[in-house]
Image 1 (cartoon, rainbow, N blue to C red):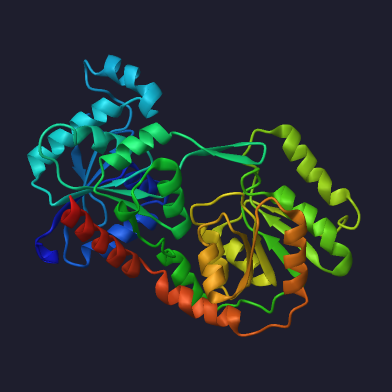
Image 2: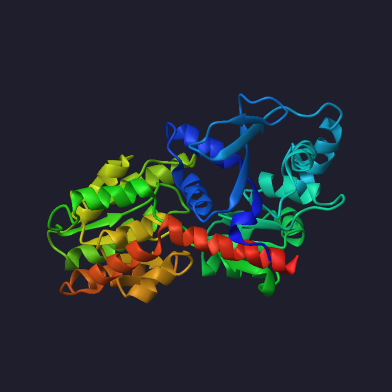
Length: 405
């Protein structure tokens, strides 16, 4: 096994460049992880995509990291028909075009000891196809999310064939939570011995804000905060139904919802908005809308309880941010960050789509005197969920991929 300093790794991530662009040049979560990985001494090259890039990879500045970008939309002449034929299976219209680019780039700039694909399908599909011909470095796929849909409240994992193809071509499939690892094993056929883990860290702007503000910003109010967008997956309707059940037991308490609508289901949104007119909720619900990160932190600190009742989440960064801000959290058992709530004891884990269970959890936490569990949880979260710890996880998984390829 080569030493860390001698390792040369290629990272294929279409979101690396896009995230930095959206944040005005700041690295973002993926960039922070790769910056921390580079600090271990590893030699790293990043291949990303950009709308204004040429077809052939072009080097661009990326905060000191070695980044190349290629076209997000353009195709290689002659591959359009094959891309079109493969799209129904691979769910990506540039699969072969990207694979040719990745394969050629590896030949020109390698050799590499391993390739990391941030598997939001296109990156993983391109790398998996590129690996079919000739020698290819061990492939490690980082799974930040899986593909699913809802039939009512019934969850159905989808794209199993295409993602399964990527995972079979991978030496290591890395999840960001124990729950996500279980799903990729159960629904996408990943062998348990091939499944790895890399924690999802708190971002540096959030950590810096905690240090500067010396949270909590103010004593909490009698307030329960829903944290998430207004869509069926995040389950604000479950939150409001639970609030209706518990409001009579908590006179004077307010129920607040962050986030904007991210669904086109107008009928569902109309029903959601009408819920706060039902006694005993009338006049006790605050619709906060889309907030800046700083305002979200302020609202978390105003609340005594934070609720994240999503029907499904591979992780839920907002859950651990609330824990870091010393607030107890109610989260569903189908959320990856639920393990942190259980382990720290700073909150409760409930079944999804269950207003009665959520109401009981709200009541229990609202009527429980403050204890040290939230402060202890904050200390642990802040020490464990850092970019440096995540980079160590990823370095371990790179070594595992190289050893088992």
